[in-house]
Image (tube, rainbow, N blue to C red; front, side, top):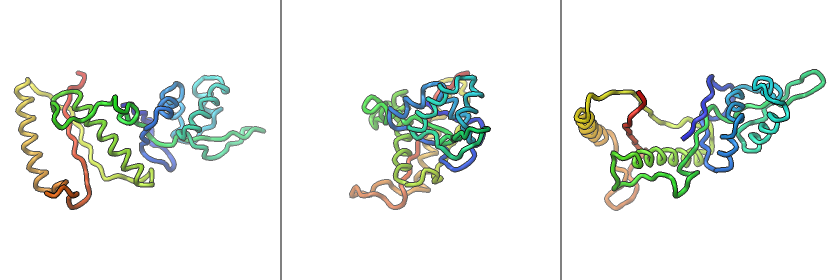
Length: 212
């Protein structure tokens, strides 16, 4: 998964993150200097201003700007006068972008196998892709790209002295989490297979090694 995050808060309307789900848009996004253009465009800029900051020929930057506009990644927000010239100004369509790799790769993407090895890398990647796919469908169904979704993300770096400590931690965590889920949620499915009571959510918990 690739995420392009702007270094400052984006000004103006637009979603916090936009999921890229088709290969054509992903190809537009990944080609340099387009990622740098989107980073700069957290506030409105003209193609001329972008070229000056990038140190690139204005004609070349203008071409990339047009491709980003065609893909819906840049928005024309207003115009700025520079002497006798009037330049259109553009703003990135979102503050951050993520590649929904499960959609881009289709059947080649890692999948979550309910009977697979929970400690395997393929299983973890399948869970990550499942989260992306769920969010992409929710965003598409919401009808509002700026709608704030009720989500919770916890992330922390921890260390284990050895494999025994890591295994004991995993066992204790599963037991504690099972108790919390049982105490505060309703079953996803009823006995007859019908959806359970309340709004559906997915809880995904991962543990993976990180660089030193």
